[in-house]
Structure formats: structure tokens, C-alpha cells
Length: 143
Image (cartoon, rainbow, N blue to C red):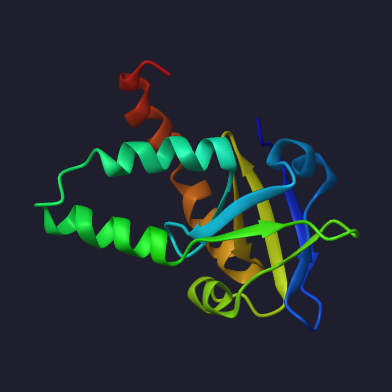
């Protein structure tokens, strides 16, 4: 399970260090794609394949389904760690997430998310204000 929050800086080539705590569970290669809320999602290959299977089962007759699947898959790339434990974030994905230099990677159970540091700070500030209200809403889900 992926847990924690780690701050990084991209190097001049657009590479970032993947936290050591994430490397083993991600494996030698994994998928990075557009996420929600303008972050990047990082999936170990087994999780990606499970997600892909669920998405393939959705009806292609629905426009929202087609749009979501197109954006998720067209933005996806398989990445591998270099000897220093870094990955190269493709320019298109960096642009999507607004990543320029400072990034934050967070563990979110079955995936890692990569955020522009400024965007993560804005998101956490807003979400923290409503944290208790959100908890009250999801308690009905049996959590």
C-alpha cells in the first residue's frame, strides 16, 4: 500500500526521484498518466491492468466514457526507474499537471499521485477546511 507525502525537485531534464518507499511496490516499470484534479496517477502494472480491464468493460456508446478512456490512455506512458531511482516525466504530462520544478508525490492506497507543489498546497488547504464535513458525508459508506 502506498502511504506518505514526499517533496522533490525535477532536474533540468525533467526527471524526479521516486521515493524509496514507493519503488519496491511500483516494480521495475509502471504506468504514469493524467489523473484527476490536475495531478498525475502512477500505477504498478498489475493495478493498471486491473483498471484497464474495468474500463474496457464500460459501454463505448456513452460519450463521457469514451472521453475519459481516451484521455486516460492517450496520456499514459510506461516508465522505468533509472539507476538513481528516477523517472523522466514526459513534457505533455508535466504540462497537464502544471509541473515545472517543485513536485510532491503522495501515496494513495493503490497508486501514487504526482502534483506540482503549488497545486498540492492549494488542494490540501481547501480540502483541510472541509475535512470533517467530508468525513461526515462518507461515513454513510461504511467507513
